[in-house]
Amino acid sequence: AVAAAVALVVSASGARAAAAGGTGVGEADEAEGEKEPGAGASASVNGGDSHDDSNSVPSEAELKAMLARKLMQDPNFQLPSGNEQLDGPAGGLQAVAKMVNVTARRALWQMIRQDFGEQRYDRFLALVGELAQRIKSLTPHRPDLQRDVDEALDVELIKQQIEHADGLADWDLNPFCSFVVERLKRLEAPAHNEATARWLEEFQGRAADSGADRVALLAQFFDYCHDKLDQIGIDTANAFLRGLVPVMHEHGAQFVQEQFREQIEKGKVTLTRTNAWASAASALAKERGLGPCSAAVVHRLGVVELVLPGGALAGPDLARPFADANGMDLLPETMAEERDLLREVHAELLKLERIALAVLRVKQVVPGAKPEALQAVYGILASDVAPFVLAPAEDGSGMRVLLLGEKAIGKAICDGVVNAVGKFHELTEVDAQALRDLLVKSFDKQPESDRTYQLVASRLRSIVRGLIVPAKEERTINAKGLGKALGALGVAPLSVPVVRVAARLLDFCTRDLQIHGGATYKFTVPSGSPSASPAVAADPTPAESARSSSTSASSDSTAEHT
Image (tube, helix red, strand yellow):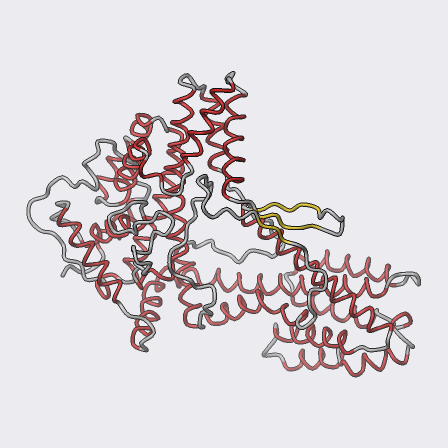
């Protein structure tokens, strides 16, 4: 079932590429960049590390493990529809991709229009063959249905029909189009049948118009059919995923562990970084006086100090948390499959530190800032900013992508904050400029030299440690004081995002220990009388535990002690 779901995921995401292959993109849109790599103001906190997987293609076994992890992480996980609009920068990238696809599609059908005028049909018939293969791929074990498709969409027969009709203008589209759409109705979810029948009826009405642009009609038809096939593939894959959830809940950790052990046995993966990390986490636990404690506590300490900005096991560059000073990867091999999640958590934690610093800067310039003003500031600082905008081309030929430099993004955010504060408080030009200058420092790539930032970051990091590292009982105690702790720091509204990001990291710790546990991780657990841990108790501000008792209990009880 996992293999079938993976195959459907791959086909749903990549099957359309061949339809436009080899056509070129005749009308590429212009992209302009405002590159300022050394700029001091940066609104982006999403840094990368030395690992580059842009050219790596996961194997089927790796895809299976990735899918199992995803279902363990989120039982409600589903593949998104291609038509769903994403938010934030992802939505901006979606818009860019859509614009590129529209350009490629327009170029393809312009060439097909020219082909029809010259009575050449090879390119169009290739699209028919591709459509037939996609339809057949959804019923691989039904040779009778595949024969129906081969007979109805026989490219040689269609070519003869077009030639006999003396061109596209007199070719009857109805038999061809009706067969395809009726077959799609049989394959799709019944809930969509009515809308599909309505679309076919409307399309047939347009095709009956003798003055209709037949090439444009065919372009619309193929777009509709491929979109339908995409959705059918996604719906089928999601049905498989829903059936896999109980299996993954019970056996997911064992399945991923077996896949990982196979990779080790084949020599594709080593445990060099994993063993180094486990040894460093054990030494850190001993140094901070965490004993006696469980291996789960040592594991969580190691994860937190690796992912937390400025953590004891993290890289020296905040923008590259999993790279050492020489650019070498620090992330354990066991965690490589969830690198993106850990990057996101690191970026979110860093973003919370920047937000807290920016809010304190506002209070510094406007000591009596109203709660409404601060809430507006929080909203601006917490929103995602896409590093580009779509703008009309100067010659009116289409749209172009304008990449924003770091200064441009920082200026836009600073102006937004100043304007938001100005709606509730009268700011002089001097105050407004002072606020802008302070905010620019909040977005600096390496703000560690700022003493205010050092204080804010230290307190927030201590709070996050308290959410994750201790045993369940201590996390519960910390939970009750979270509001007071953040209020003392002046950033009480950050309670929700702090809890949310801590919950994600604690979920990861629980899942990672379930998968690898004592079979892979070899921790040296401190023993002796317990003492206060700087990672948890050195800072008096407590923090909330973000997980349920069952999750905490399972994470505290797994993993062997060495």
